Length: 89
Image (cartoon, rainbow, N blue to C red; front, side, top):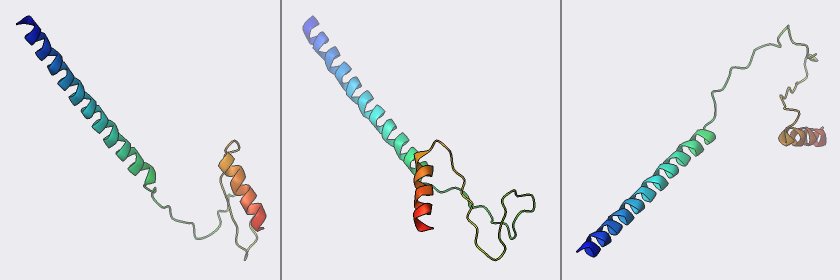
């Protein structure tokens, strides 16, 4: 009789373990889905100013287009972007 009770308790613990694993995997999957959706969602677009800001320290030549790019000095993507701009100039 004790062996049957032991076997039932092992069976129940396996069922709980499998259900726990399935629940955990679903939670991780849903969390990753939300993170990936957030990552792929663009931010709000800002309005471009109609004229060059007077307080800017960047000198602009009137009549010619100007490109202003913000970069991080330690980011490899920034270095790659500058390299691409140099090739196109």
